[in-house]
Image: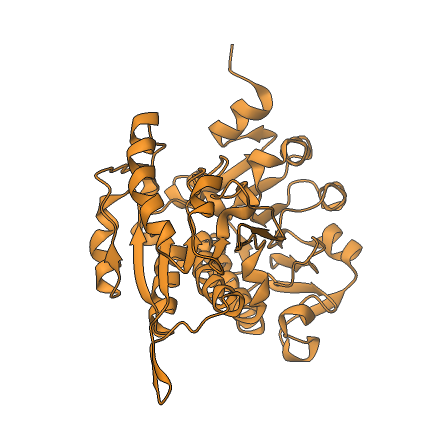
Length: 376
């Protein structure tokens, strides 16, 4: 019997993305799967039901009861976990570190769950890297928010009334989001500087036409992420960065450490040194923010500076964010689809690395320790 892939309408607040777009529904069908989809699941992402020629539509309860694989954007609700059939597979962002009750429910229902944020960052898995695809959306959108919020021009303008100097933009963090922010700010004509504690990003920053801010601090970490800095390193970094922050019209802050609160990089004192009318867009707002004044989902005004704390930026560009995410999901799932049947190769480092729960156990060790405690 062909594997049944279920797609639900996302119910998390302000979530507009969909896990499967028409292009990927057709590919799943070609791979031998049957796709069951809740009506209207793609509406918020501008993929109406009429564009899905390769799916069967049904109610959420029927999809949960029948699907062998559930594809999600946001983590499943406890109600969804309770309704899915035992032994089913759920794939999506799981945010396990913040949702111990969900992890326990997945374990107790013997559901196999894969967290897209746990996909190993190896060359073979680049096409499955949903963190990167969605971070690119966030970096792009953050600059547009900054440009819209800043009450100045970004590019240099030469007019009969004189020359307008270009805005000075500082991007903190040169991961995928930061690099996309750099590229977007440059396209809009700003003068761009960028900083990252990982010195290896220097060449990437320069290749996009931005100046790399040298602080003398390097924090290369595992898996392409930065390690946490020591207090002495933080102080050294801070002294240099505060000078560059003060000189900036716009600061785009993107620094994060997976599974932890975002590092505090922009202090209240640093904000108070900024120009009146300057703008900070803190992409890390949902993780607590890189600026100590950030409030998720709000715009805070302090000493003439606006601090924007956007949440779920990819959902503000749902059409392309959904396209990229759906391709990530398909590329992840495809190796397990053989002649329409689901066969997971547990020796594959991608599946082994991304699994959260399986066969009544929490397989991701850091999550297991957080939820169940240390082994005795």
